[in-house]
Image (cartoon, rainbow over all chains, first blue to last red; front, side, top):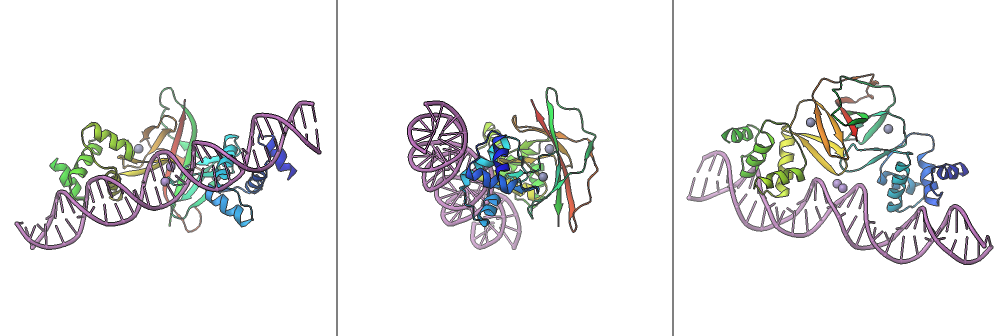
Length: 130
Length: 130
DNA sequence: ATATCAGTTTAGAATGATTCTAAAGTGTTG
DNA sequence: CAACACTTTAGAATCATTCTAAACTGATAT
Ligand SMILES: [Mn+2]
Ligand SMILES: [Mn+2]
Ligand SMILES: [Zn+2]
Ligand SMILES: [Zn+2]
């Protein structure tokens, strides 16, 4: 828990009670994909009631400090990803199913980048059915 | 315009005034990416005032009949794509910039599909900067 | 320690895209 | 032209997210 405090401090984030709880859950070593809502539910199960406003604030604070990635897979909710390595996803909209693809994927045959633009990221989403 | 009526009828859609106007705009031969809002604005420029509810209804009707694709690139708005071929996109969130990639892209190195799931579509989004 | 202050949390209101409701209008068919 | 199913629409509702402003708390200096 002091590790978490240090971790937060080293990212210019005050180690508040709420951030410590949230970071403790998110960065426990297992990769996670959460929404504000799912995170709120998980923390509630652990008897940590934190306001949704703070959950949103914290997810954004972590995101802005590079501790989380943001995924836009559905129009209705934003996912945050604790796996900050470059990677891709299997995704099932229907089942809200989301799995990392950490293997090196190669995308071949891209046309030239539009004038005066730079590629920021190539994102591959494998949509699943059934 | 009779073509449009036939086109709508052949898709089990009654050729109403509104659908004729919307289809006439969307399927004029040039590929388009629209949101409900942008479509409303474009039609208004052409002096065709159609309620937003109808625009949403129509976009979904067209989508359900396979006349449009749906793109989820941002959490705040849904894009509909008149290019129904399999293809990919350059996308700039900041500039709401969206360009088709019609060239054949190959995605190599995908891991095996999760058990009991089937790949529905492999989507490549090239995020642009600057 | 204690005061001080910037940074944080929070309830509740606001926002904005989208969907819903239910009433009025219209295309189709006989 | 009658009858009816399908459509359109204004306005309300929904819901994820953001905003506001007041209360709270971690950090820092004394
Ligand atoms: Mn929404
Ligand atoms: Mn929204
Ligand atoms: Zn991931
Ligand atoms: Zn396209």
